[in-house]
Length: 76
Image (cartoon, rainbow, N blue to C red):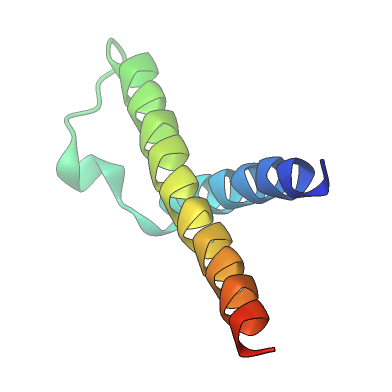
């Protein structure tokens, strides 16, 4: 139960951080032609990138934690 809560919190935290970083660091105007008609689609693309990358990074860190716990139990 605690591992699931940790996983959900980790996913949400990394998705939020990636969303914030992509909004502040990436100049979307250089990559996309943003017009008043497609502003909504650009925001949706930003959200999809944030979710995808945040989930991937979170899964990586959760795997590292699990691997380190397994390695520690093997050593003991």
